[in-house]
Length: 264
Image 1 (tube, rainbow, N blue to C red):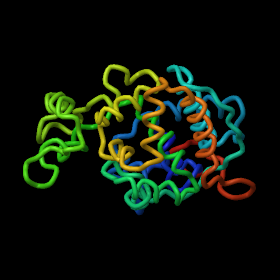
Image 2: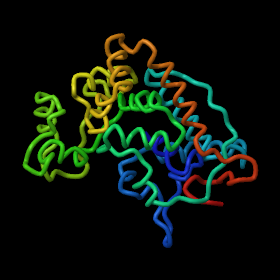
Image 3: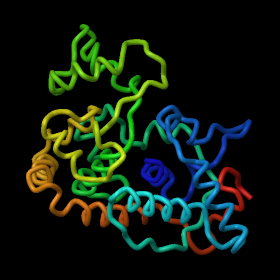
Image 4: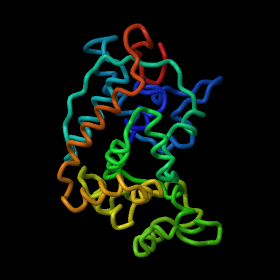
């Protein structure tokens, strides 16, 4: 998740890793990013790299490599990561509100978000498969469960049995730390099961359910569900490689940070 959010704003320049300053609220402190985790892992890897080869490997490349290895370690594909990215010096919280795909987005909004970054509809549905791992915070789905249209109702696109199960995990007004698995029972394993649950109308977010509202994305969801992810792993690797080229800084643009949370 961190890799996806990192690459979707300024591009592949490590901007989401920067800390806020007195005069500027950074991306990592924007509301959509406040549930991101894993910054300490990137910092630890970067610190080790700086000891071995100071000033050579950027924070952007570090995150790209760590994301690939993390996916591979939990059963996902392995792909080649080209290096040479440089780190940006700008991180602006307000951009997260306007550029990141929202968990409340409909399919038209999602397609616009991805197209703006040079990514295709296929990339959209493939990268959504990253929701096979991880958790979602209950406060994000509270309205979907309890007040979808402002009348105390539940989103009708959600499977009723799954909605009932979610209500046991996510209570109205519950602590912000309460969570639900995005792929129940398999949220620590990278596989194609995400598409099976979406096909059954059990996607956690509205943006997951939205994949059934478009001919192309729905067909991909159904194909991966029926074939047990026949080509999902390769497709995911291909889309991650493509995502890794979004907004890259090279040459004299940007810098190679010594510490990922601070500009040099």
